[in-house]
Length: 188
Length: 178
Image (tube, rainbow over all chains, first blue to last red; front, top):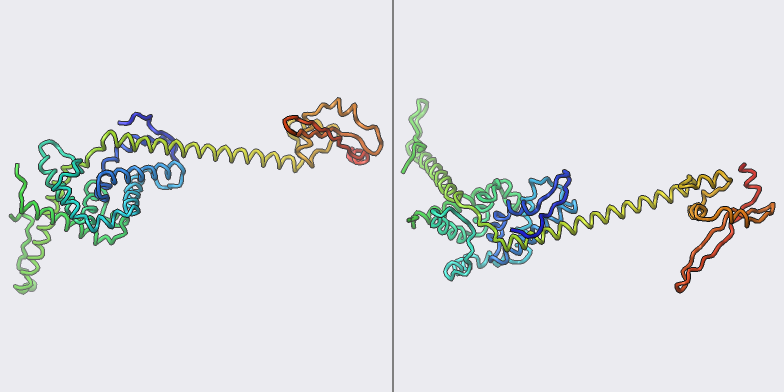
């Protein structure tokens, strides 16, 4: 995956940090979140890279005081802030549905957000399409809860939203996806 | 399709609910149960999927950036340690000199009657100087005695001029000291 030697150093606990392994473990779920937050694939990749560099800098310089288990949450938050800082978020809010529809219709973005077993490929394409068509705030909660393994409370803290709002968004998103599946059942 | 989790409100012995309220509550409970089942079902679908893996190109690019950043931070940290260490050593030398503690051979100078506690430079210069030379050149006066030659090295246009300055001290002070 990476020709460079593993970047190892020593953290506060005096145990070595293998950033390559860490990236291999959490990279995919962070990329999924970045793609949900950003307008397109290249923006998401840039944001992910910048967020992880921020994480490394914070940990290596000692300015990040959290435990190792909190690095992932730090990276998620960095991805979110960076996506907002770049001024993409507003545009995403305004044009999200239109862009996604255009993307799906024109096949602009070929790289999938999700992966599945071979026999679930049709399910994947349907669910992914529905996920992309959800409102960004709703899709964000689904991505963070299902694939980021965050609790509703953690998502509320991260996004600065009330816990009840997060729970409502999650239920609404799943209901909307379910209704879509109900109207157009999955066929094999 | 209703599952066994569908709710039914049985008649109670205390006071039967009004039919209208009974139906309303039952409807709300079943709706909540439906929503819960629906969520679990959709979750089971979604959890069958995984985030797409990073391409090797992207993973390589980000991995290199992380490596470079980590390396850079470590070098900065090492530089900071080095600077802190140097500052500590310099401070220690100044403190030792200021308080007249003997360091690295200066003790012999003190034993010979020297009082070099006022200047660290004098002590250091004394260590490097040729004792026999300054003793030979010492002025045999009663009032003053040449202790050693303080030397100053100046690099003027590439020619290292070496200036020696005799440092003297009153004999009386030495006597008092002894």
